[in-house]
Image (tube, rainbow, N blue to C red; front, side, top):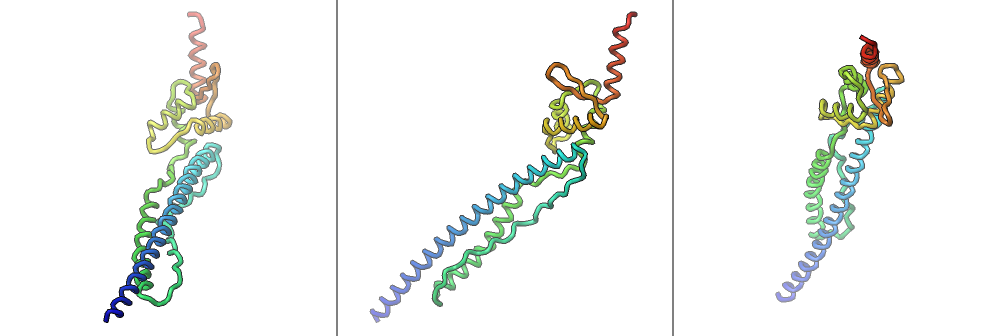
Amino acid sequence: MSETTTSTTELTSQYSTQVAGDLERNLKEQERVQGEIEALQAQLSALQQDQTVLVNIQQALGGPAARVVPEPEAVAAVPAPRKRKTSARPAASKQARAAKSSAPARKRAAKKTAAASPAAPSPSTKLVDLVREHLSELHEPRSAAEIAASLEQQHPEREFKAKIVRLTLEGLVAKNQAQRTKQGRSVFYTTPETAEAAQRDEAAEEQPA
């Protein structure tokens, strides 16, 4: 009886040690996969931001509408790490059950990470139309930085960079839909109609009464 008890105790100790080692490797593998998911999400977010800038530049140059990649509903399921082949022991069945139970947790974590990543904005109105409309409302020339700041106040849900707004304004100037004036080192933009009205006012002031 004592020999049987001793043998059972030794087997239990061996199984416990093996399960503990397998569990530790499983946790490390989960941490590695989670790190890869976070790195991919950061890379995707950077690509989406670059896409927004490129789309705005393309719109400013009057190019065709760019194809927008739809936001994925969920991150693809990460395959479970390969398990080390072992003999048919009770510890193997416990490890299989633990792997199955951890798979849904990994999927839920992937979905949360995907939901947390910022989605690329899809503006309904082209930047060139917004800039043209804003110019028509101005009564005096404004710089590209001033126009970008005003547009941000009017449309807080969108981002307006002065460099992109300047490219848009130069595109309008090339199409004779805007006029550029230079005062010192500063460049100002307005509509041709506003510029003509300002010139007429100046000419009227210079004429003797």
